[in-house]
Image 1 (cartoon, helix red, strand yellow):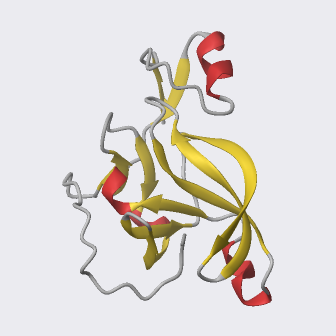
Image 2 (cartoon, helix red, strand yellow; image 1 turned 135 degrees about the horizontal axis):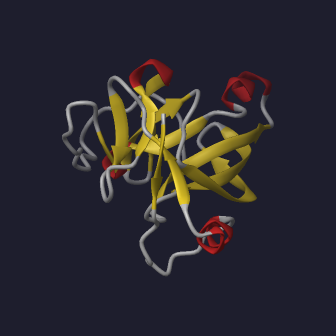
Length: 149
């Protein structure tokens, strides 16, 4: 389902977002079921069925690996050294408010990491969960996955 939503004038213009502003109206996809959404503007990002792993982490705490996400813009590709080696990634931003919410794996250079290609990381503390609650950063939680260094 899609609905029309005028974007706020946030002044944030990550790659591609300016073009959306110039087009006038923004079409945002509203997902059904248990969803993860932006903690700033409640724009839907993904459904629970698209979670591949909840055991990833980044410098801010836990993160989720998703197979599919919606309502994001993808920034410039860049090479990053992560705990699992070199990857080419692109930051992802909320299409409604411009908040940086995670990144997309474009290329994994290690054969054991190829499953990440085309997948999305969303940082847990930047989203509201299916129950509508937010997540606090907790660096004391054990983290077993791999992510940004």
